[in-house]
Length: 267
Image (cartoon, rainbow, N blue to C red; front, side, top):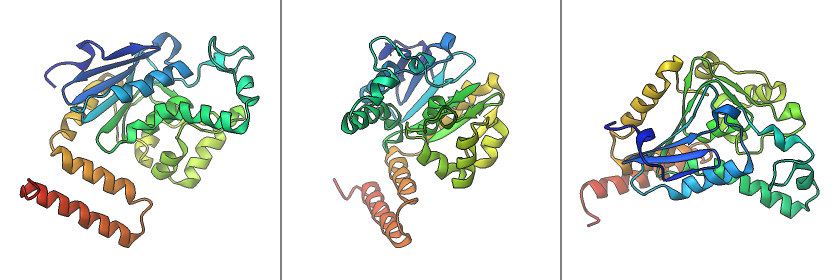
């Protein structure tokens, strides 16, 4: 890239989240390294806002965390009776009726949802700890580049909870049901080597090379025409749920659109 996104003026910079844009590449950075980028409802709202603020020129979004850890999960203050000032505690949430509780969790999930949009490709650059909500945030992205010191873990079950920030679907899709269940039920760490071997990560690199490897991947993703990437991403995402003949039809329809666009027949 011609310049570093981290050197540009931020489009958004609040509540532990910074969004910068460098032409077709946006970078979302978690900016609380002293807290190992622990997550809170305020951070989730900022992540949701970052997705809404993406300019139409953006094709690739890089997600990274400052410091030694990508994200060590939920802010531990959320587990205390008083919770985080200005936010509902877990006890407060438990006292809400079913509809209100469902709506609250759905709002939290929005921070983890927009990374899957077909008009962008998202890359998580993950180093150190990616635990619980941190693991699920990495799973929200399309691709994962990991440092050789990465340690993924899904600790929700160990705390009497479940992974509820959209992480179960991609985890099972990537590693299969049996391994996903074992990872979640035991809460154990998943290393860089296992991450690559099981398809959880695309590539593992030395920690010192993480940013460069992520930038190289982002640049490679920009080499193909944007509309072809969008159509291909949509096809690949639907392939996991469509019956075979339905997927064949979707391929034909997508290719017809591409052929007509390349031949300028829609002008």
